[in-house]
Length: 368
Image (cartoon, rainbow, N blue to C red):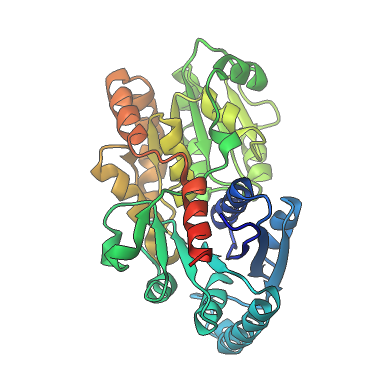
């Protein structure tokens, strides 16, 4: 294999895009330590901090997405898009990549379009079960489209699709043999059932409201709860439940050790982002998904229903969660037969080597 390929990875905006991008970069370096990698992100978005902290160089584009709630904010959109394409062409001229990768997010579109203009082969990593408008358009000229769900030939040329799965943070899914350590970490009992609620780093209002509404039911059932509220809602939750929560409840703004949280859980309640689903498939525990309705093209609902089709999760609509979620979780945590079936089915969907498989496709692309 030729040493020292030059690869651009573009995209970001959320952890769901950034973590897979970094995982792909790490896998590229693992395949060939001489690989030179440049990230291209959007100015002001979280990738501009997270990527350098992972040890990679990043250049920011002054680009934004369509603002669905404000027509006025969209006035600058075409100008920023054109300037971002022009800057992307300049980046490509200077870096001279062998290939480009798009992981989704605002910066991915301009960079990959510029790559197509300059004759640079590119790969799209489509995370969701339903492709967005930008990726559908870019997919027409993509050399490879790496996907995580079946049926993606609805959106892309079938002969260019490779089912790799979504890259995950390997340290987060390495839970083998950690259950006792997990209960010690959280100060909980290994003899009691435990529900884990995760709403992402920023949090999920519906999940938090559902738990607050029925917290007494959890306490009365003598079930333990590890509750990650997210940054936006932590203070509000602490105010509502008081400074001394019940002994069975652990309230945290952020989970620094996702592996231990997963290891302790008997049932997991989560949103339905593609990256999170990829982790949950590898974890292989009973899951209740409550998709966020506030994402482009309702991706999360489509992701969740793809798992429901395989009887790999329970699904509760966001609009019904406050009334139904905790009852469903308590019923599931006590139904061993159903929990076992869900665990077996979600485990069948796991693709743990997605980062290395995608990296292999990128290296092959760069040599073409």
